[in-house]
Length: 180
Ligand code: C5P
Ligand code: MG
Image (cartoon, rainbow, N blue to C red; front, side, top):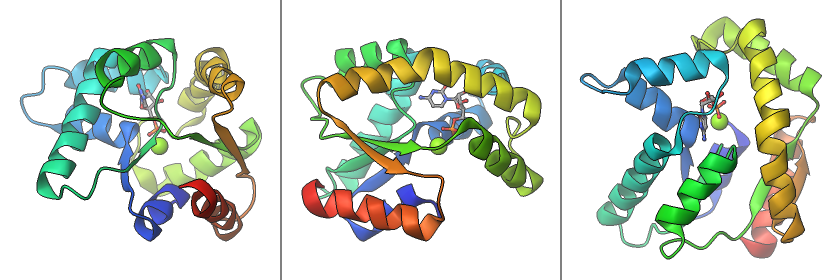
């Protein structure tokens, strides 16, 4: 189980992964976005936010409709670029309050090795070296600046994610116990 899943389970958060939502939409029969999402994921590029924010909003609304106590979310893998952030600000600004960003800090090399290892069984079309190199480029060019923006507002909580899942989770737990 990932640290995100564990954190959600131990606290009253619902874990929503933007990547998981996009992969589900890609697989949904009759989706008009399947091919586009497939291309973007293989290229390690960020899907236009109009698609992603709709999936996120729907998932959040459905969760709260089923159980009105479930209004706290751990949103994983979002916002990944300026377009994502603009979309969030447009659609969510008066609906959701962003407490902080959990930043799992890890070297590119370790991330690539972990994803290649995961690729042996994940079946993901982007857990291969070619896609991973592109994902790193996207991260450096588009995602880093967003993290820096949140940092300026004192909203980033950094966890050293290069260690074992247990150690990483202990740090995540400490952040959530303090202010989650
Ligand atoms: O977070 P995850 O590793 O599941 O993301 C996999 C891919 O999904 C990204 O490389 C990107 O192509 C797509 N994605 C996106 N927008 C997001 C999150 C993921 O386009 N906010
Ligand atoms: Mg993810």
